[in-house]
Image (tube, rainbow, N blue to C red; front, side, top):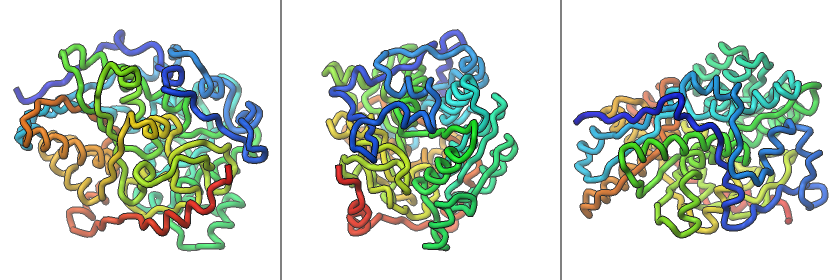
Length: 451
């Protein structure tokens, strides 16, 4: 047998998102108002988010119904297939069974529309006319542009400058869906101009781009801010991935041993694993959940669990999370979606409680693994996804050594069709690995809020 693809019918698509908050081992530390150091009041969040999303952010309901308007758009590409990577298994000579949830089949080519469509819907419902956001590699920006176009909303995207230059086709895709794009730091905001004056050669960062997007949001009427990762409601929307995966594994009679996903802010990995984490929290399973990040941005593996700003200028509420510091400026690695200084508070808590573990890999090893995957399975992974594939291969090789027949499941979070320049650089031997120096991390952490 050369291929197994497990599909669900439209009728089997989940009708509700799973909210992990009531099932966490302890209550999530609340967002804090940086002016008072006390839990942020809803009014602080209303300046940038609609009430519908604020309610989801703080909800204690285990299941939240997916509106029919959102479901009807999801049906353009959902349910997504679960593939068994048989050719990769053969190449690795492993007894492990490897499955991947293929989120690259969405129109923007990644998992990001799962929340972009939901966020656009709730904003439209409350009369918002315009959404502002940031994007690293462009997958989130293109997803929000896609969603805003469907709901008739104006979309403004601040794209991290190094990715704006590295990935022009993502920018073109956003413009095709009627979005306005600025390379960040830009001359369009006061904060962007300040950063440019201090360092004209800066590659930018997601923290800077977030600051610009929020500044733009609060300066315009009928505008709200939209975030593609980190926050509770974003992870909530992504759980449709894991809920579908649970049904698909049941169809083929599989009980997973290992889940793997790449991690920037955490929405992709969380979307896959949160529907499975409750059993581990309750001691009913010992599934190994592995989040994978680049050595150039080691938030999970080197960041302390502290309160920090989500942006560089300190406009956001403080979140307790694993962080490298809001002043952190990562190197210009090609996995632009994995260059964020912080991590979802939900995942940060689960890592702190040792229910999830983390690994960091260099980008050349990630691309090496992506090439093997493309040559065996045919799908070209995004650079972000490639980090997960590196650890999938490592775990499959361990099974080959021990003879264990483990079931490994990972998120194929997006395709690499707009990242061919990255592959070209790798194939020509031009990519370099980068491990962020501990001394630089220490300097960045000096400016953490004193909470």
